[in-house]
Length: 282
Ligand SMILES: Nc1ncnc2c1ncn2[C@@H]1O[C@H](COP(=O)(O)OP(=O)(O)OP(=O)(O)O)[C@@H](O)[C@H]1O
Ligand SMILES: [Mg+2]
Image (cartoon, rainbow, N blue to C red; front, top):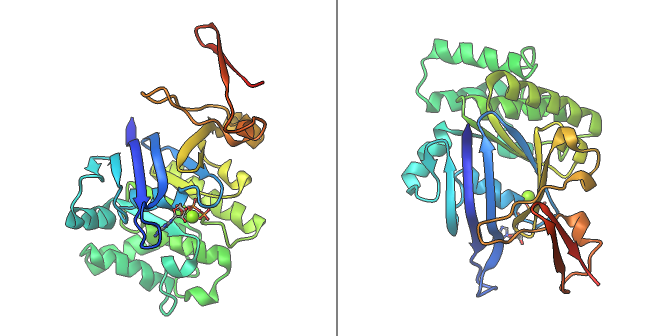
């Protein structure tokens, strides 16, 4: 069942220095099923965070269609977007101080989220306990973030992101500050939560091994999707070989293909039969 539908999404940042604006997303087309866990990879500056901010309801798209559940994000007012952020979406960022307040315990951090929902004390206590069991921190809930390891801090951030039982979890480089072993451990919790609560999850990462824990890997290059594949079919990034042909007949080729072609040169298209089409360059 479709949970997220994105059509022809564009984002152009208006800046004083660049009068024409900076195009960050140039026609993203993406459909994500309910409960699916996808990861987004791509070079620096390709638009990954911009896409996450739009899905988080923190940034207005310039044009296009963005639907998450029954919320049309391209149509929501400021108030509608703040309700969407409070109830529908949980976020986990690379830097721990964007996820947690460092002066208070991790339990108090989660409690702030629950108070915003107006839950009574007993219910909040029960939910806090549940969440810390889920992220393997039940014995650490009275600690402040500074008293925990990097992996534990990100797991506490995950508990905060999930406190209000959102339908969508967005994580932007959640393992960016972690070593390989700790990153793998965080991903085990992440995957487990995705499977047990059935939450739809989107994660941005630079790390191919981290990306492989998701169901599907999507590559973004220069603000467009340039390849995707189910993780189980992928050994290396070179196996990323599905592209989306949009209704205008355009598509963007994966990076490992454009790297072996001469760019900004003519490409010949040869049709052998339906479904067998070849690209050829002199
Ligand atoms: N607030 C902003 N104002 C102007 N331009 C911006 C702004 N935020 C991002 N950009 C530009 O938009 C493009 C996409 O940026 P974005 O942060 O989405 O990339 P990214 O894929 O997340 O990169 P990274 O891997 O480095 O985090 C870049 O060219 C960036 O410089
Ligand atoms: Mg980014």
